[in-house]
Amino acid sequence: MQYKIHLNMRKISKLENPFKMHRENVLTYVDMDPELLKEKDSWYYIDGRVMFFKPRDDVRVAGECISQAYAEALGEKAAKYSVVKLNERLGLISENFQDCGRYQYYDFCQLYQLFSSFPRRYNCFTLKELLKTVEYYEPEGGLDLQQALINRFIFDWFTHQLDSNPRNTNLRRHKKTRKLELDHVFDKEQSFGVNSAGMFDEEMLEMWIPSIPYDEIDFKEHPYQVDGLDANVFALLIDYPDMTAKALEHVFSISYKEILDSFVSGENSFSLPEGTLAYLKGIGEKKEHEKEKLYQLV
Image (tube, rainbow, N blue to C red):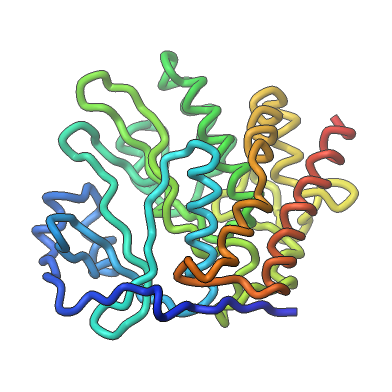
């Protein structure tokens, strides 16, 4: 079954003829690969702020905003999204969260610039490899970064994120202290079983295949380790039991049902019909049940 959202047009701000930034100007504010900027070219200067706009008019709006709400409730840094109408196009707008004066940023395709052993090819490493690399290259602060990476992985599992590809996750290094840390949660629109038609789809929840898997297991061929449980999280829990248990407790430390209820009100830019709300709450309940079964197996 598939589920929709309702856009509340009266609550959506209109932006007419904002100043579109040239690519070279964007790169003075945003630390990103110039090649990536060619496809993410919709940057605007609005009210003294650098903003990124992506046109969306389907449930990806909800996937992004609900993921942001979850992340913020957990105390994580997250990009802040608003639903707007820009030059007659509906979509999501977010303010640039980078502070290029203090930090150097690296998306996961640029990890070879931090770790000489990392390959340059797109999407050709695992979380396990990254955790081991951090342990080797970052003896000071490495445990904190490992925990943050595991927390983010479990967050993506909980929200059933399907597009946490290497371009959608950043590390940042403080230019003075040299501390390396995980950057903001962003670009999580393909959460909770969003399908190609832009609807929440129960069939999309049958298997979670993260863009960056935990280990080199053929998850498409063998999607579950045991008793219907996700192979990624099971393997992570075996290798990093304390950190993974901490991450699982962290992601369930908030009331996801209360967060979802906040999107029912007409005060938001979109609302969730009763069936959609039940569907989303059911995902959280299913994940909670999986967590308890994981604990029983290890």
